[in-house]
Image 1 (tube, rainbow, N blue to C red):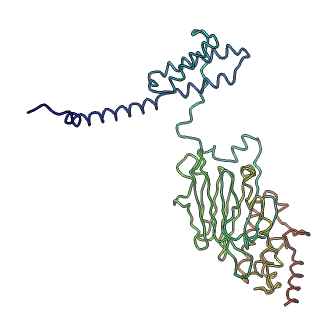
Image 2 (image 1 turned 90 degrees about the horizontal axis):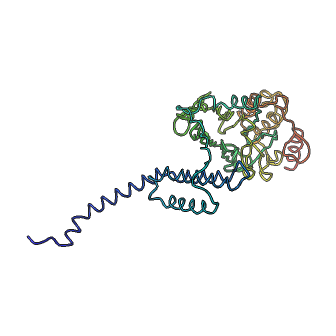
Image 3 (image 1 turned 135 degrees about the vertical axis):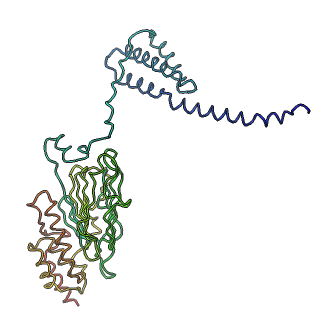
Length: 401
């Protein structure tokens, strides 16, 4: 047989070349992973940026000797790293610049933080109340927000508004929690709307919970998060977020102890209501530009509903019947009573009495100041409305018709 051709030899050796190249690339990748030059750079910058003495030359020389020692320790794994070789040249140049000797004092090694416990954080670290009490020596302050009916919104600050807010609007949007309500019109002839869907996102909190999403719609109120779980996941603090079915298909309570928050969601005759008790500190954890939250600032003024004008020329239920039905559940003629009257007259549905009743009961449980539980209408241009004004406006409407 003749001598093998060059082409044959090339083809014969190609797989071997490719294999060696692949192995070399893997080796280089491992070297990069093990090279600690970034750590050396960081420690050097920290040493010269925060000097503990006013002797600038001593600071630079001590830092450079420590820098040089660090690079020598990682030299074997950094041979193919351009950043490493650049650092070596920088050290040599600056040692000459500052007239530093190669032998001399170095910076003491940085104190390393203690390693985390092997099983992660304890459950107590995800108990907001306990952590707050240990830190401040007092119990945390709480705030309350409620949304019910057409919808009526009670803000953290105690304002009470009736809003249109068709479509989706954020009730809350802070560092820990996002709540969005979707509303639909009560009827084609009314500006009033009802909440038909609630989406709640408990944002990932590394020490305590995985991100969890809960969604409720009219006719579908699950007793679990979207992923089928009923708690915050497998992390050490997973049990600090739990969901409980208080009444199947009608009443859910979510307890988020890690942020000092309890949420109640109810379905009452083709609409949802939302009530929340939250640690005040948590409620304020959002940037200034993120202030469009109905629970924080209420509805934009162009979304306010005038309860007198929106009822129109006709009502689905007369005033006296509405007042009588609402009075059976609500003994104080505050804004909850007035909202009840408005809802019944707008819809003709007597079952909506329970929406205002449960909203008041939730406020009774959640509101931090029992003395301010009841809110009464004020005069002026406020969107709040007294029953007397409602009666007067209805009389005018009837006269016009």
